[in-house]
Length: 218
Ligand SMILES: [Zn+2]
Image 1: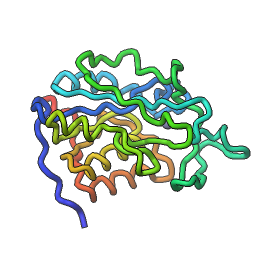
Image 2: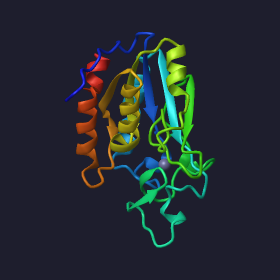
Image 3: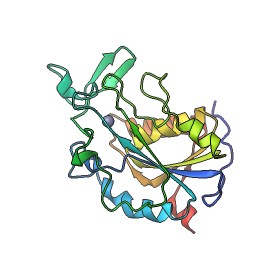
């Protein structure tokens, strides 16, 4: 059964935050883990950001030998799945290595009033799609506590990639009790073996709102 979706505080409310996920060079069309049309979200996210009092960013930020990299596992290729102690893990091309140009935020992202940047995936043995809880589903990033301490109860998610880091972050925001929306056209997806349809299905079931940028910008 689907959960009821709690109502969203509007963008300008001090109770609402825009969570801008992984708008980084390696996820752009010319990057090491390209998301088709990924750069198209940048101007839209800049416009959205201007409407929010609270803007937070995430940055995928891996050590060079991270467990999610196919190159760490002999005989394995990117986009295969393997079993890790915490569960199944999709393997990726090397991407967003700490301090690299690929890990940098897109140069045209303009969110000067953003207050917090969460770097995730920094443990070499644990991936983290979600901005809230790492892939072992136990290690927390501290983001939920930050939001609560600032009186924020509504999280709007945008960025890359919709069917992985955005979806996992939105699902965890809901699970932590936040009213949550995904701004669909301010995201782009990887869509690996039906992952995009699956992500929307889980988010619908969890009570994550699906909104458009136009609804928030008018
Ligand atoms: Zn990653």
